[in-house]
Length: 372
Image 1 (cartoon, helix red, strand yellow):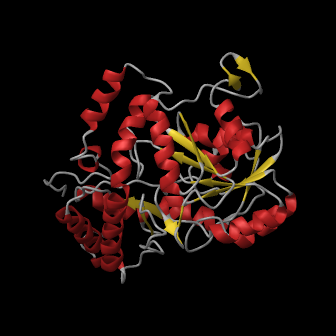
Image 2 (tube, rainbow, N blue to C red):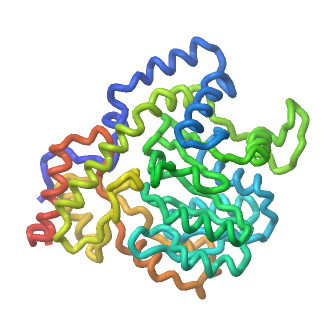
Image 3 (spheres, rainbow, N blue to C red):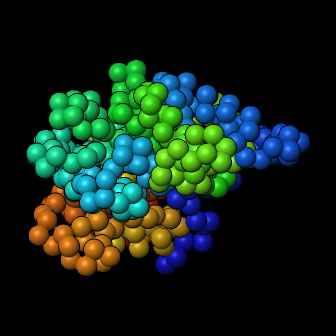
């Protein structure tokens, strides 16, 4: 029987943004009468670069543009391979294709579901032009080892930090390990705008200069095109102002996400579920993802209990119909098993404790037989 209780959402913008002076940020921009590439953008770029611990932040229109422009800044040539994972929603592959490259798929670690260093070591023998390492669900990859492998091979490393704002290890935050880091500020992200937005971060002065040109037509100065391959990808003043209001709260919001994840891990420890491997600083808890072969049954039961869920992500890149069977000969058993068993539970700042307990009770009921 369907629950009469209100549905617990997978994410709630209303709850996540409660208490933040978003209207004040909007008024500030409206009163400035400056809407593109103004003071708010410059201030946010400086503040986010300082927070991440990287010299340069170049804001752009969205996270996909961030990845594409990062590849263009590295001078990716048509047909060159870019190593990436296949279990992260096709976002890297989209950017690789837009930049003219070809994905080279690398297997993931069984525990973290992020790029496996041993698999990357093998892939580097094919001499890819770049590597995109995704910090999936907010979990830092084994980024130190991946970075060491890339340095040894002379291959640039791009960190895909779209889900890992604020995750850290050894005092270093996501986005400070690779040659370039790419962020998304989509509204559901740990640091989310009220629309699309993104950024590319780097410590390299020359790459930063290329990225600033590429985001705005390839200009070296107004109307002077110094490089081909540029586009129109700018974060607007309004989104920058909103992000400035939210950035000081990121640590607090991540702590709440981790606290919810820790409660779930504690409650589900004896259930037949694969749980996140960390609830520490290296996990930003963007998504709380469990794995079970009974995924569809559990999702149906939770829906009846008024608990929203989702699947991130159901189709491995190598099985996407757009490829038309191009990767039929590629075997990535860990990635494909994850796509077949992963599901996300509600976990976001502002989520009430009573909702967390409702989720716990509903999941437990399914495995106790009440929902079978």
